[in-house]
Amino acid sequence: MNAPAIPGYTHDDPALPASQVTAEDLEKLKATVLFGPDDEAALRTAGEVLNGQIEQVLDVWYGFVGSHPHLLAYFSTPSGEPIADYLDRVRSRFGQWIVDTCTRPYDERWLAYQQEIALRHTAEKKNQTDRADSVPHIPLRYLVAFIYPISATIRPFLAAGGHSDEQVEAMFQAWFKSVTLQVTLWSRPYAESAW
Image (cartoon, rainbow, N blue to C red; front, side):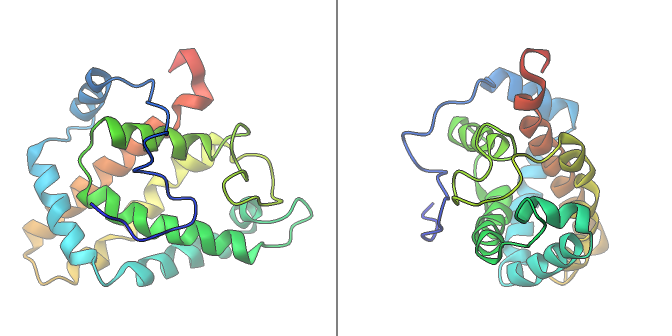
């Protein structure tokens, strides 16, 4: 898959370090969130439905973040000024994340990029990719809490594809499971060996 040139998007970078999460760990996590082949198929359909709606989805998510000063603070200077360039660069990657969630195989390359995404929320790598003068990390509690709005707000976009209620529900459940799985992976650097 050839993704467009997006600043800081390194999914296919061969220099990206391998994840410490093994393929076996991933299979166990997938089983724990009940994510299986039917979900993979539903996500592919979701990717087709969401194609062409990415900017509208991002408008909803950015509206949500922007309406909550405690969330916008993580894209702002330490004194509280939102950093427009930082927001724009992250937005491009966030849009690609939607595509990747629906279309990428969940393999070693995907795991490596999940680790990179995780680290970019922590003091180890936050702000480095975009050379942003922002706060040093995002607390894990907000990554976990963000599972709900990122999931709940996707349903109307999934319903816009003209599929049956049953198909929309399957796409939604697959999305919800995937987001939960990814945030679980993003929690690893916060938990270190306790993960």
